[in-house]
Image 1 (cartoon, rainbow over the protein chains, first blue to last red):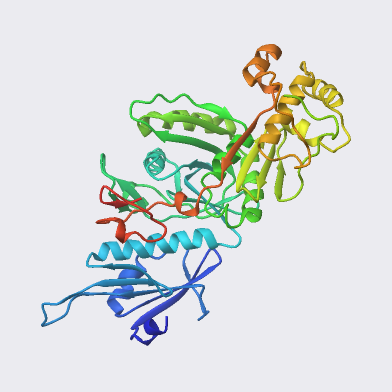
Image 2 (cartoon, rainbow over the protein chains, first blue to last red; image 1 turned 135 degrees about the horizontal axis):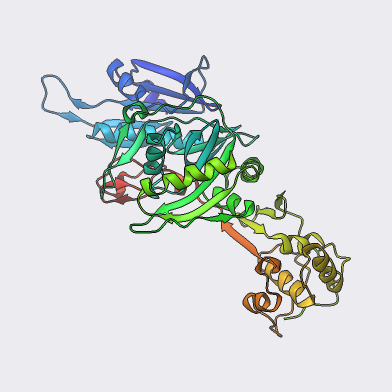
Length: 276
Length: 156
């Protein structure tokens, strides 16, 4: 860390997201502006100089008048996260790591890996792992009029309310693992602002050609489904466990494999009409 | 399988987080990092594992509360299920010689699956297993937290 501290840092920021204090510094003003585009959702500038995790971003590239290319470098505290010529890779490393760190360290929130939309003042949660099709389903629900809350984490508080985590959607092209960032506004949607109670939890996974045959899960089975996607369950079970129970006890759970996302939207919305 | 008559069933208390839902009980085992969901029948049995209640009495309680046929075999089955998940006191001894009914046979006998004790379990996931990785990669040497592998040019 001392070696890093000796470098010249042109710009920096201390910010707070979900109760976690994080810092970002960069070797040029331009590098700082680039990295700041990838700050986690809900990051608010903070007056505290002391942070729990400090990201140091060194913009490389070609120096003027030289054929030498320098690596883009990213560090979290003293640990090197990226050393690459690919700027996008370095910036996404910052995005991934900062979001993940906050999800695990947030003191008063429990982060469940899930897509979330709002519908008439209540939330629909879609827990699931990467590549389960959460983001696609969220995007389709938004196109159907739902309010965007998250395509990555359901952020739950002690009362079981879901808070917005409105990062850009990471939509993957068909047949590709590569995702592109899309603002929700570019999809014609709006983003949620206030916390919502949970109305419905949909436990589903995309399987080509699968038929949507939803069956009800009990609250206990639902709680296990949420737990299976909870970031901090191993590190802070005493904080996470009651919150999951709270969320599970207030909403019905549906479980089914699904085919194309647009084929299940009507069923989900119809279910919402019943539980509203 | 029969249970020892020397000790009456006693629920494990240490190292567990317990949350109650309307009919079910959620248990998180801090030592094994596992979560369990006991259905109503299993929860009733576990609740009465106080070191004082005999199996016959548990069967009567089960029959009354579930309003369904319940006998000692059902309770023994439930105790085995609960014991397998390490939710009984370690001093409680389960003999393993005389195997009796399976879950399927019990459902056939009782005719109601919900009345058969069931404990569902989930191993707590690693934090990194529940994070999306969206950045491109060339090979696994580029992996950094929270991503652990490079699949088809993307971190996973």
